[in-house]
Image 1 (cartoon, each protein chain N blue to C red):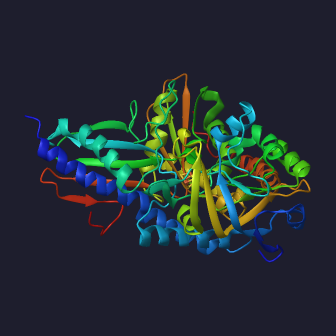
Image 2: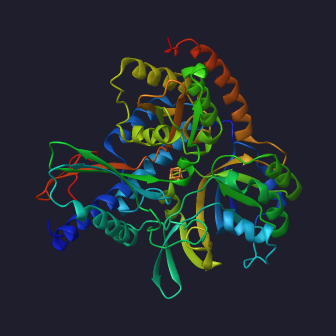
Image 3: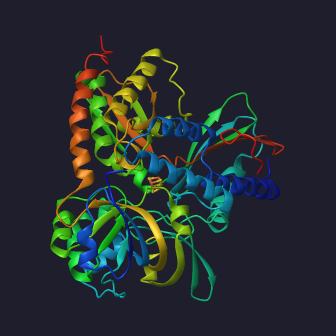
Length: 206
Length: 300
Ligand code: SF4
């Protein structure tokens, strides 16, 4: 990762922080991260409900964790990795505008609407390595609480305090760069070449 | 034979431990393949991603936790010998084991009732855990394959009935299209399971059964084995890399399973398993001794 820069940021994140990073850079985050995926986006954007957590300058984490109750209203994170961000594509730009979230954490890329949302709201989308949920859980210092618990364990908003949370690889920056879309173009081009190379090899019909 | 409560209890205890272990530990063949791949992937983001994956496997083991938060919809593929004496006890034991493992592992609550749209909170739901049955002649053993069907790795799944003249090339194209779109989000490197048959549901089911075969194994039909290798090589040259960040490889492997087709149809099914391919196989004898085939040397 030698061509890229590594940043250590603390919430609340500022426009100045976000302007420093470009696709391919790596962030380690300390501070407030709140989980939110399909149902949270649906409530905030489609149902227009008031967000029960002040998310300005914080990070939203596309994740549905495994939590364990360890006392009255006290929880521990057992395992918390990113979920597929693309599912939130239709709602994310509006979500950014409504909440003031500065950093999105998920896996896989997001599309053009979110890319525009990141430009308009000076925000970034980042990727935590998928399936590495115990590493992520160990970077959570504390679970401050939960909102919208009625949505069930994976869909609720879990308020996490994190330290050195990462690696968060920047996949969409505030300048319109989109790492995974760039990769996909390359993959699709190579796909055509490989299908061409395969043609004739699989002709088992007589 | 009378229903044996004590045996059901004993079986469910064993299966609970089996599920909990599978949630935190990848099978031997998957671990070995990931190690091999990590040695080849020496450029760009790939080494760093493989490092985090390795650290995650170690932490899941040392802390005794599920390695991925998405412990999936529990699926069982059961092969039961004709002479296995506790047939009626199997299903209740599997259901009970899922309930217990949900608390013990703990597993994420993943069963959402369709139409009523609520999470049942214990991974039990209408037809969940999903149980697939096969009867095996001349055996008194119970073989249980367990698979955690996560969301991200289930998303590339598809089935389609092609016309024969679209050919096996047509199947390859559909697989390549899915892998360069949805596959990028399915926590690659994935294991690719392909089913080929006469109708969509058979092809789809075989594609999942293909994922239960070890990584690196080959279909006994030489043409099918060649198709496995050809597609694997082609996909690898696309270079999805770990996490879709690019690299020298794309997949852990390609497994194909087939059933004879209708003269007028060539149906294909696709299932993918993410790098955290939590598949486990146990063979249980009537006296409850067992062989934990996918995780050698592990005592439950
Ligand atoms: S695709 Fe697999 S590793 Fe990735 S989040 Fe889903 S279950 Fe976990």
